[in-house]
Image (cartoon, rainbow, N blue to C red):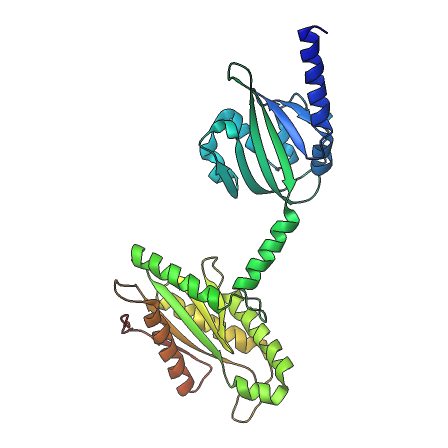
Length: 328
């Protein structure tokens, strides 16, 4: 067999091998045209090789609009674009080692959304010139969903589904530092379900849990901005963190929350209570100063909540001036 025939035979074998790998794989040439689109890739994406071979249209197997895949980025030498395009990625100092990334893909032709782990590796000729890029895909959707579920358990309250105390503590610390750095207002609401112990004693814990769920949903619905965080602080107490919000804005939200819970009309009627479940809310706002801590904001909102309780409940009280507590 002549060297050329042997080379052609080896190339044909490599192509057949690639086409029948169980790992979804496609190959681009140096101009980023698809030269191999294997059977496993067809099954994963719902796109037949005949539809993309010789084209630059491989993106449509994964996305609704044209954008670079990992193999494109490697072929173009544009690894600086990875952060914009991929949820997670790895860039090696040696470009010959290729790229690795993870991302959600909409998979329009397959009609499903998958989380894919992607590897792209270069192929060079004897002179070191790039001749092709191989991209392999792994469906990591089940693992990603399990990871997200575990993360959700770590930051969400098991009863109400809103953020838990741990998430509140972490978020308040982060927002405090940001407000301190940017010198903008930060507001905090602390809300307490009025006469909740009596409600539990009257109706039982199952009704009490249902009441807390309904109240949490009503509070969360009024904190409409993505930056706001609604959390269960403990027992029948709830908190709302509102970045870049001054006292006037915080009081407006607090009054909406109070009205929304009253409008639920959850029957109470315990001795000394009104006809339905209500909230008392304490509001505190500040522009964080150096040397102060988030504890001062919590303490101010808590004092305002106590004042709301003492002055008749079912009302909003604001701590207009906050004597911030310094760290001990």
